[in-house]
Length: 137
Length: 137
Length: 137
Length: 137
Image (cartoon, rainbow over all chains, first blue to last red; front, side):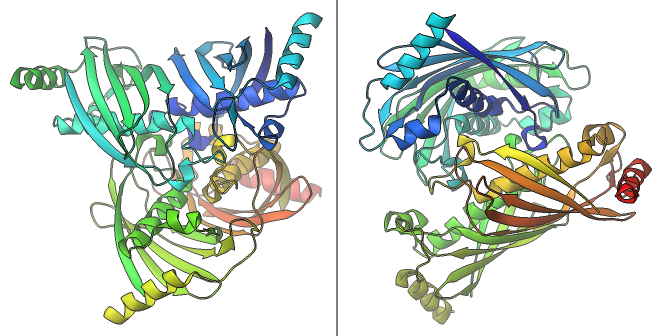
């Protein structure tokens, strides 16, 4: 439907004693990637929250192929794969500076009311932006 | 094959502004759980590394059902599901203090030579411990 | 005034490629230490927050002497050094399993109203507990 | 002696349930800031390590004035204040988008041989770059 590339540099804090970027850090990288992807569509995740909509993650899968190392600038390709009334699915591919595929991953997020913590429908603004963007292509 | 329960308390640092334990922290919790599970079998992950064997994660999946909150003591049931010459698979179930299932997850780890970073066979000590433990049951 | 010892094991995620426990992790360890220190006095930091009092940190200093390594069980001695109407000061000493001093540190926290984010006086329950504890000694 | 500004956006993972950027995260931000400051001088911290020199932090102080919030782009002014044969001292000031001072901090780092973990003298390349840069001003 829509894809966007986000660049991120591996911090020293994010390495482990194996010399790899710790496997648990990618969840955080993908959060950054989807926020920047929404921003590229003119959507602010912060504003969604300020307007009472939370997007908790309901599932996450990642397949690791090669490690990332300290100070490498990673390219995360973030793809919005599916959007429905109830959820939004993002896929990710992480490449290093030599264009090697390091891992690929997927997250599903659901729409939740900030006060009640109950599921709500996808905000119209989000659906419209995505549909328009697809039409333009 | 073998299961072990590990208790872990959610740190303030691990919460996010949604008031939830951040979705990315569980990878770290499961790392702690599998290290303690190995320790309960008389195996030290640290010693494995000191003996030249690394166990990087090759894939990770998690399904989130309910959030964990600050200061909750979580129970992580860690299950060794499969061990072969090439990999070891752990499953996890996280419950909160009210015994609600918060999430379930799975990781596969591979055996790698610390110097060459090439795959190696599962160390005998690990296989023996697990087979003996299963026999004892 | 009051001191309490908290044990904490260095997680793999908390190491860096130097093979040390990353210098930035101690802030989190000290947070755990002061929460457990308050709990040992019958005080729950979570309940303080639920009752509308936040305790943000206003300053933090740490002097590093020796590094901590993966899987080491650290002993953090947490000392309440000073409590006034406006702030509470904790000192910390981290020792490893061989009883070597790794670092010493200090944090000052202030009392803030959760809604207004304005400074408030130290909750009575906190002052009473600490004064009684000191008297008992 | 030398100063450089680094921009960094607060990640969701870095917030806590107070809605603030967790106080412990700044150590990581300052690590990023000093690495980028060295890079602006044509120095790669990664290469220093590859050449056998580690720079562990020997002390760190921070004074918090105002919190940072989710998605804010922070400006970290990083200042090299002192460089001697044995150590290098960086000061930091963090401002938010409205140019409010959020905190100021200081770290001292020492030079250590990667193999022996013993103190070594400041690498010449580092001293030369800094002296030349100061002369140019």
